[in-house]
Image (cartoon, rainbow, N blue to C red; front, side):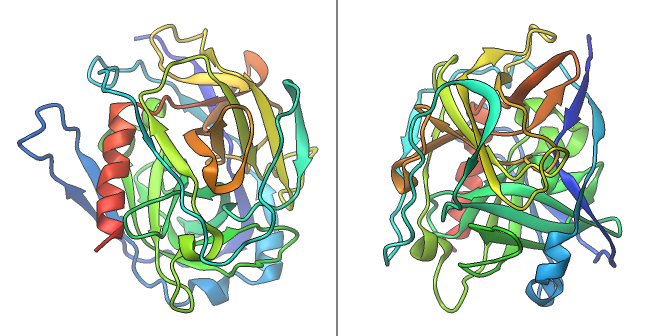
Length: 332
């Protein structure tokens, strides 16, 4: 098995905090689907203090962190081809701020964006340290779910605590409130072996002032098993130099394979976003049009050998099953 060094792109906050006792629960495969992969559900505990813990000052103290990862060759099971599926987005009950970002010319240089209602940051604690990633509100049965990178939920077997989502974050402000995580779903291949091929998690959040997340900010659509080499617009909150993690940025480009790992299903687009952008959404069509946008990957890792490219997992059958489990649970 060939391996190359990959660097995930999330950031750490320079604060020390206690990590709660958190136990994973595995959602079993259904007999009706012989190709079912296990999806791990994790229930967050002790979340009552999370919103108050994440003060404006704490959210603004994010520091970048570089982590080396060893890529793994995708299994035949993960390459299993399922029919394409597109799940449309959902508009908020009340009109949110204008949420569009037009088609832009492909360039590795990230472009500064205005805050967008569905896109935001997740803040969390792992092993006594406070971290930050990017995330996006996606449609689900329960109306309160975000997508992010799996390594933002579980890193080296340790689950996050004090996990919240802040949509439209900018310079410490939370215009749509802080949304507390209830549970998270990730592919067992990530939990077991940190397989970057499936570096995606879906996090269900609770209601805020009696409303669901999608009622408040809306939710974009999601798509699985799409053709490769599409044009994407990726968003994130990069915190490593020359960025500071306080504003939203985007990159636009046509996806290419990870040439250092020929068997990999991951794809990359030209992008110079740095640590902190992990988990940020990739939208099909090279543009963001609010709740009519369709997400099809997340920011996952960068390669030293291929500078100015951001790579994301192919959303195939494994991620699709993870989404389905999470969406079903969010409706209960």
